[in-house]
Image (cartoon, rainbow, N blue to C red):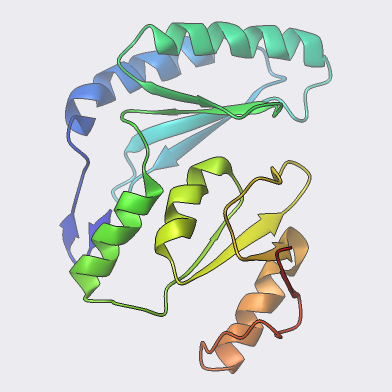
Length: 183
């Protein structure tokens, strides 16, 4: 996290980054062109995580086998691997991910006690949904239905919703267009 000018890293991240680099090299050498690799970078441009994604693969079976090999390789390293059940992608991190703890840290550092709106689209967002005041699940083709959010919004409506929220001086209400109450 970057809080003002300070970069705050989770314990163990620096020690795990060489393993992440090793895993990324393995991925680039052992997967075909059918799998997309998305490097996640920090504010200085350093790769701190990556995702492998075979949604667009022409040969899904082969891509799934290659992804399983990558996951096995990464699990043998001191890295955090997240496979989203039934989804054609996985994430590799240098440490366990706790978005709720990260949101709590941001709230504390910025002196915020309320009015926090959090949007997310996967189970790893559930911890942050629980510590936010307004939690919105973003619906797209791969969104799991068991998110712990209060509201839903379609992925294609996110930009319009954010513009609308700005026009309302960031005052959220459940009756805003584009947002539905979770049932």
